[in-house]
Image (tube, rainbow, N blue to C red; front, top):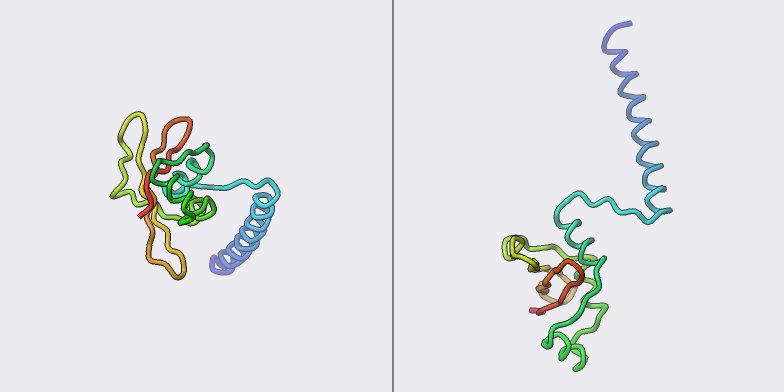
Length: 126
């Protein structure tokens, strides 16, 4: 059998196997709720979502006035993009992250969060 024909059979079998593997892994992730975060943005947001949080005085005042609510803030942790250029990821003991989020009818919003080992503090929204 010529090499081209064997290569064709190999690639056909490989593609079918990859489709089945992707299908089973996708279903497994849905059942267990597992997330596979390999990129830095995903890893930071997942870490921030896993911790308890508190608000700074500025944010607490905005929540009390009804300017923002907790769902609006949680949207940053689900759909935001971490701006690593403006974040301070080397500071000790708490790192500071700037998270940007675009909502349909509003301009890009920026949330500043201090990430400590046991909790996060939401500092400002611009």
